[in-house]
Every structure is written in structure tokens, then in C-alpha cells.
Length: 142
Image 1 (cartoon, rainbow, N blue to C red):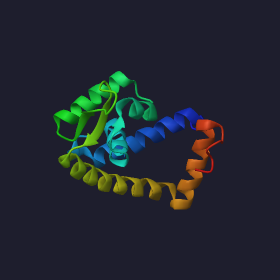
Image 2: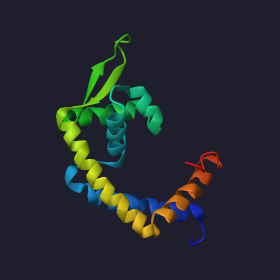
Image 3: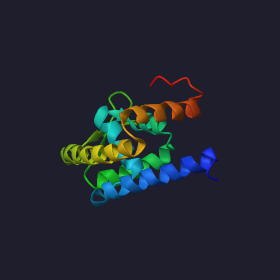
Image 4: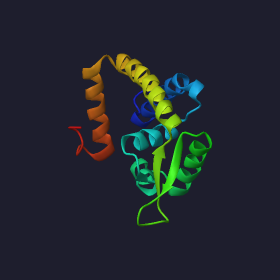
């Protein structure tokens, strides 16, 4: 098993997720919620369908996720301008503070992962190799 790429990737993913979960444990946030909140923070007013597409999440699953974030007062839906059926997503005032704290905690997590890889140069090489697997090298320069 030690030479099987898929097995090693899965074990690495579990280790990264475990550290992430421990880092943000008191915030009670899952990795999928983290990703959604990050996208909303970067681009307020995005449509739900755009976020679902960007993250590869089924729209129905995103609806449930957003429902939970709304109940917690972190994010909110607003009706779209011309298309009244479409909902745009925004952080609430509490959500802006929450995401700021979330990002600070994530940065500490990310720094631990970079250290485990051996530093920024090794991180960059690792990401290049992962990009070769993900899209056959077309994003190797990212």
C-alpha cells in the first residue's frame, strides 16, 4: 500500500482534514462550509448556482448548507436583481467577523501543513504535482 498513489493521497487528505477540524473545532464549521464562506467573502453577491458549480457541489446540497449558515446568522440569501428566482449570497455582519476568525485559524493550519511538507518551495512542488494529476498538467503553473 505504501506505493499506491490513491491510498497515499487519501491518507494525506485525512491527515489534513483532521488537523483542519481540530483547528476550527470551536467554530463548529465543516470543510464544505469553510469553502462556501470563503467564496462568499471573496465575491459577495454570487448566485448559489455559481458557488455550487465552483465547488462541485450539487445545488440541493448547497441549499441545505446555506440553510444552516443562515440559521447561525453567518450568511444570508437575497433575491437577485432581474431574476427573482435566483438568490445571491452575502455574509451577515456577524458572518464577516466569523470569516475573519476562520481565516486566521485556517492560516495557522496551513502554516503547519507547509512546515510538514518542508517549507514553501516543497509546498509549491507538491501543488504542481497534484495539478498534474488533477488536470493532466494544464494548470501546472498555478
